[in-house]
Image (cartoon, helix red, strand yellow):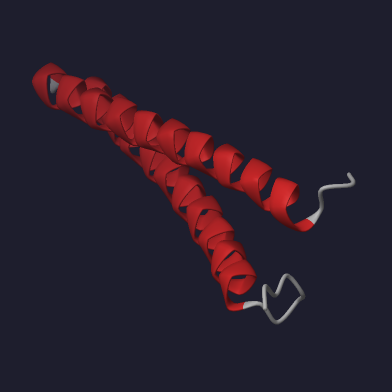
Length: 87
């Protein structure tokens, strides 16, 4: 028997994955913001090399966030197709 109701373990796992990806993407964005602030502080302190390193790290976190958002969009589409095909 194929279950698709609210108690379906696969459905619940998909919802948990959606929550986890959302949380992870938000954390990556927040980290990127903090590191970019540190880059500005390093620039102000005359530490250009450190500022460049911080900017590179910030870019990496933003790329990671975008990758997570892409996975999230794919999972949301699959979820909707599987559990809400009429929408």
